[in-house]
Length: 193
Image (cartoon, rainbow, N blue to C red):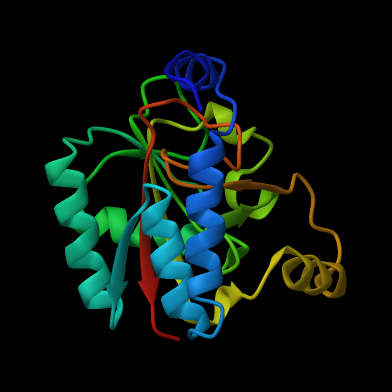
């Protein structure tokens, strides 16, 4: 591929053949791996920051560390359980997405092992489009939310019924989704069930 085509592809935000091939190649190499390991590898390959947490105490420490390192001042968080974490670490949050929020602390529907994407719905981000989320997104999920692929996630969603506003996000290096912003940082706190 010519350098010009590569640069134009990046500017137009089109998937780079090499990036897609790298993801496919990595996915093929991991096809027999455990789902959690495969997801973690592909998620970090896409530019996400993966944090395994054995329990809620470790998740709280990791969250506090991320908030300090990233200098987060205000968080969008409407989930009641997640707000408890923010109360402990004493970080201001809003229940509605505001322009001054510099991070979002949310849950997710599923973690897709096939390509390292994270599936969101109105349960996680209300009526907001994922592109409106702040440039720092912290997601708390459980190991049991890892599914093999998009078909697996969709069949589980159909069984649960009434889930709207489905979308997926991935790390800033990924070419799978339309990125929120080029500088988006996606952090995952993965908890054992």
